[in-house]
Length: 274
Image (tube, rainbow, N blue to C red; front, side):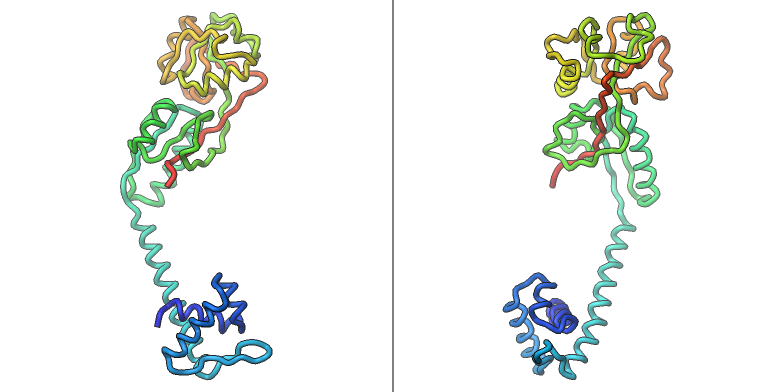
């Protein structure tokens, strides 16, 4: 006797109807009727009969329904216990790629919870720019990644992280822009810019500035933001950055000035589909 047959019979007994039980089980009525006939043939007894009000269990049917409840309950409990054991015994190593952003704190909270729940899981964090982390994810060198929009995520499953990232300019105290409360699109036209080499970023800033990438004065590009602090300090150019990369850093002679209208993007937690 198969567990599936017991589950089918128990559902018929609960619903008092072949058609209703078939709908609950998401199978066709003829298929369920045939399964019940096969079960009765296997047991060599009649389990129910039909009346105007629906299915009525025979004495043998009542006995089997009671036994089926016990067997199915024990089966479900056993399956759950194995699931719990798998959950408790989760172990292994995970490599996480992460861009520099305000959401680094979010990653820390995620990892804190993971380590508490799964003490046998270890991790390694790789920092870099979005294009580098994406390439590593594609090659399987990292398992999951935190990337900052804009980025093509068609190939990935993704979960947006809650904290938005605000964009602006990192300027030196000697910059003509120093002291402004915000950067407007007109300011970009006469500003020497240091930007991420990612084309998506450059397109986004050009769109915000209502201009073309070719018309921006991009004098240099960078991969990791700490490489350009000294360049900004020496007034070589002003850097397009998110505010999060300036937090918790001692930035002498530097100031972050947000864009106006404000420009926000989100970090996303991504992993390869399938």
